[in-house]
Picture: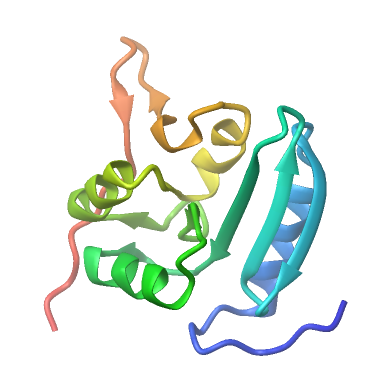
Length: 138
């Protein structure tokens, strides 16, 4: 597969890491990639996911709107590594549209869930953990 370029500033190393994680996931049965950062795959239950690979330290609501404007078929947003996160507003927007929004630490767990967009990690007491971040002011 050729590796093109994208207007989102996502590096090939980020794309390659995510591609490897998805292809090797035990619940993924078919995989393809297009537009450099869009990954489509089927899961064993017959459901399909259209994922966008991003590398955003803090993904905000405006960026979710940009994703949906350019790629309306996306139902899963990967923001990047374990150090990346998203705002509460971005997560709420995604939840209200049944779109998964995750960083690398959440990704593989979400792919096992039927309603993947609702997945969250839990602390020792069973409370949800989200990698929320505040957006930096310009």
